[in-house]
Image (cartoon, rainbow, N blue to C red; front, side, top):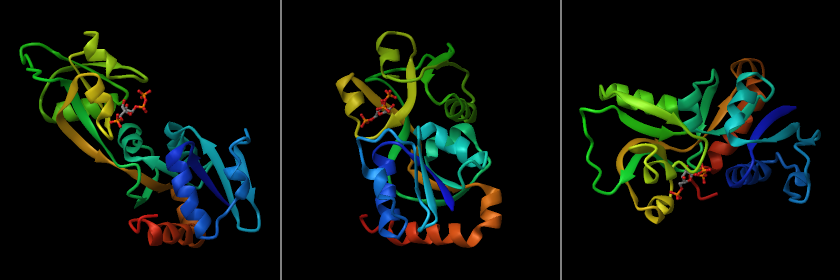
Amino acid sequence: MINVALPKGRLGNQVYKILEAAGYECPELLDSSSRKLVFENADRGVRYFCVKPTDVHVYVERGAADVGIVGKDDLLEYAPEVYELLDLKLGKCRMCICGPAGFEEDRSCTLKVATKFPHIARHYYEELGRDIDIIKLHGSIELAPILGLSDVICDLVETGTTLRENNLVVLSEVVPISARFICNPVAWQFRHEEIGHMKHALEERIGKGE
Ligand code: PRP
């Protein structure tokens, strides 16, 4: 049985569809009225866990799941000890520094940066040799510069709608982000054939519009 940590939501559904088409189906998983979190198809040798997207890497690193689907943002932020097997080229967005239009940085002051990703933000500004004060938030990051809590934010931008509707703009791009297929290193060693088969199934269909 391969244990798969699937992120709840649209990305997880997209990846599941591909796995379903590749023979790893588990029809129960599509029942939206269900509150179940574990779905198993013993005949196909697969068990899915539906978890919060930011928890996927924890399940995989600890070996509770053999494989999982996670955003590159979480891999950069938490640096889990997992193997990144595949760029799924789904859930594409950009990690960006954003702020009010026309924002001019006062380099004599410590820059206040609000973010859900303190490690990524710190690393980005360290490379620039810039002192920053990180303000860790858990959501609605765009509010921070509007209310004067921070000067800028370090956050994900997908369509840009949230920025536009809040009169903010991208000031610089930190790194492009997409979903990755990850694997527990021990599982990769001992269940190489089964997991390799699943990787191949995903690889076959990714980038072909599925
Ligand atoms: C994410 C991100 C931005 C928004 C970007 O937030 O933090 O706020 O999506 O998407 P857009 O460019 O398409 O507008 P999310 O929806 O995950 O909610 P959050 O504010 O609670 O983090």
